[in-house]
Length: 59
Image (cartoon, rainbow, N blue to C red; front, side, top):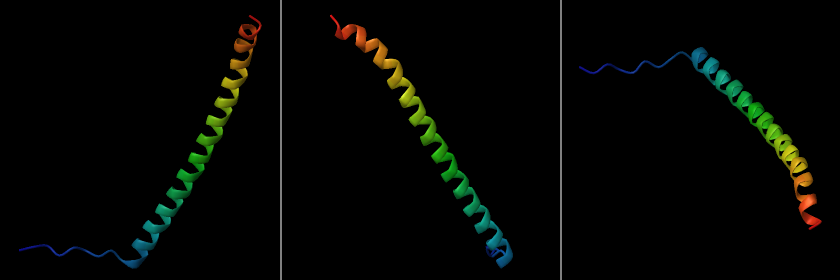
């Protein structure tokens, strides 16, 4: 005897879909924040690199 799968009510499906959409938007926002942070790190590294390179160019 096999159990039939239970189909959730429409209201449950709608709630779950809304939660998934919110989670997707949260992940997109987090991804944007990470990209901004990476860009700041890249800029900082570039600024630190220039002073190290300039003295070596004089020789």
